[in-house]
Length: 103
Image 1 (cartoon, rainbow, N blue to C red):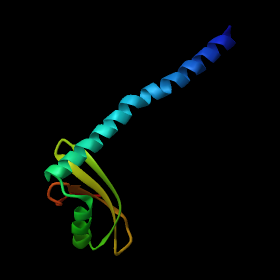
Image 2 (cartoon, one colour):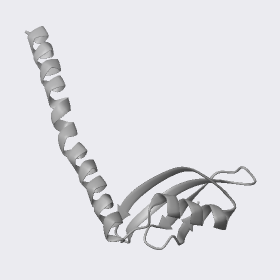
Image 3 (cartoon, helix red, strand yellow):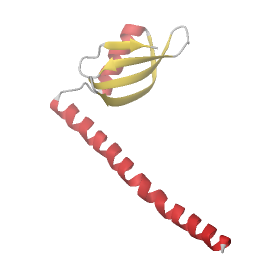
């Protein structure tokens, strides 16, 4: 009897995994579409423009990026490797290209 419940539990767990991923995937897709629309409207700057702005201000190279929506609006999280080689994270306003914070 315990074996039957174990098999049933494992089977139901495997069935629940795709269901758990559904809403998360659609939320990620919606953010992607919202970002694309914001770019089309001119509400945010394209990544290529942000990269040029930041690399000229900091004097380093952008080695990673992520665009995210916050309660202050769209922001880029950029990993930048300056001339000294120590990687820092910059939070940049996606609308203006201004650095909001450094870590």
